[in-house]
Length: 125
Image (cartoon, rainbow, N blue to C red):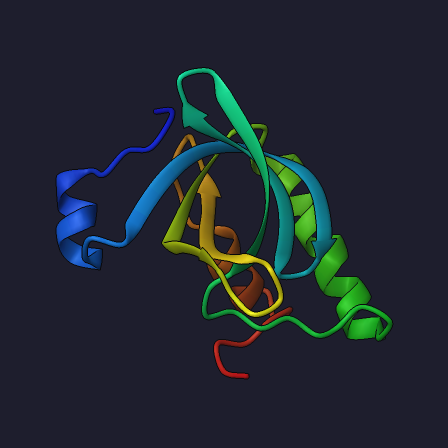
């Protein structure tokens, strides 16, 4: 699946502001932020910074933040190279990041869920 796709079931469940892109991870910024190369269709790839929506990992510079970033790097390595990125509203939040979910293109639970399940993030700020 590449480009801007609105699967009917996903679009109906999430509303009209959901977009799905095929992507690879260019860089793990911290536990809940990734730099992605997103395929937006027609042979066009853009680099975006995405923050996992609804998931809060500790800040870098703390032992917990370093552990969360290491977990994210390992998860990306294990589940990549291809991912499905679902963005919300397709506009940036106040820190210039797109709010998104990231899941393996092959299927399975997403990164946010894995971070919370492993104890490296919470769902409340």
